[in-house]
Image 1 (tube, rainbow, N blue to C red):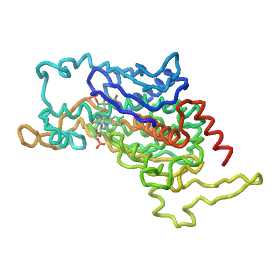
Image 2 (image 1 turned 180 degrees about the vertical axis):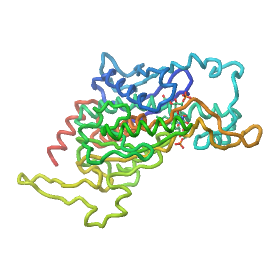
Image 3 (image 1 turned 45 degrees about the vertical axis):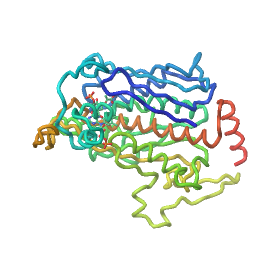
Image 4 (image 1 turned 60 degrees about the vertical axis):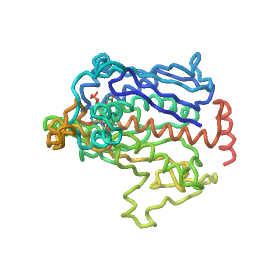
Length: 379
Ligand SMILES: Cc1cc2nc3c(=O)[nH]c(=O)nc-3n(C[C@H](O)[C@H](O)[C@H](O)COP(=O)(O)O)c2cc1C
Ligand SMILES: C=C(O[C@@H]1CC(C(=O)O)=C[C@@H](OP(=O)(O)O)[C@H]1O)C(=O)O
């Protein structure tokens, strides 16, 4: 069973994660994972924090001479900014620095303070912050390497920012992921318009959200199951993506467009070629039928809401004074959809890796590959 937990505050010393269930004998390429760590940091519209951090994953356990041993893998990402916060984020000693009391609409501030009985909103925002997603990308990087060894690849691209949409005709999964443009968008013309939109939002003291797409390539039929609600692959993937901060909607394949289609146009007809191989001409199902991968590319679309911290703050209340104020202005991103798309790749990789290990087992990478080969031969 592949599972993980993350720990760490946004301005604490570091982020960590413990990952259990990595099969033994997998070669780990830390440099490759650090490329994703850097991709998560980039993106037009990111705030001042990204100029401070240069995220690098460090492995503290579970890997020896570059190979997994089957032990839990501990990963660590240092927060460079911590040096500026040692007093305010001290584990012991007396409280230091200003107390945050003006709750931001759209953030965890107001409800978090009530639920956890805190007086300083910082006690909530430090952990609700999407800084935590750096740890998820490190874990997702391990999952991606496991998947790569089994011929599965996960890519993404940003398709919409603040209503600026890519030209759908330009979508070709095999070009995603390699794309290192600032906004992780394959449509250069749309990307320029997106950047202009972000520049304008910044000038206005406003923020933006958008949409990204994930594609899982090379996945065999039969991951997930129709047998029980919590084993359905679509449910697991969408749950994992919805767990990312600020993600508010997920659709698989045609998704909400199904509402406009009759059954005759909605479903992907099944054909046999001359060699008796099954194939489809369309992929409206987004690669999942009956809660199981069907062998086509898994295609998922994800929407991110606009960043809740605005430099032209929204109306709110002060939780201490109990009076109307403007929300607090923490240093913040204007738009982080491209960063979220990299986190989306990581969460999808984690779920697909979990499904792979659930179906095929795998204390060692050799056993896992052999089980997959046996299954592929049978089907
Ligand atoms: C990569 C990434 C970066 C983010 N950056 C910020 C930010 O700079 N400022 C902010 O207020 N929210 C930011 N968010 C969103 C908040 O973390 C999120 O809206 C908040 O935790 C409340 O959770 P919810 O939106 O899921 O309800 C970011 C989210 C992601 C995925
Ligand atoms: C630190 C990251 O994102 C942070 C996410 C975030 C939030 O509220 O979610 C608020 C900001 O934190 P800070 O006040 O330290 O600038 C972002 O920079 C990161 O992505 O690594």
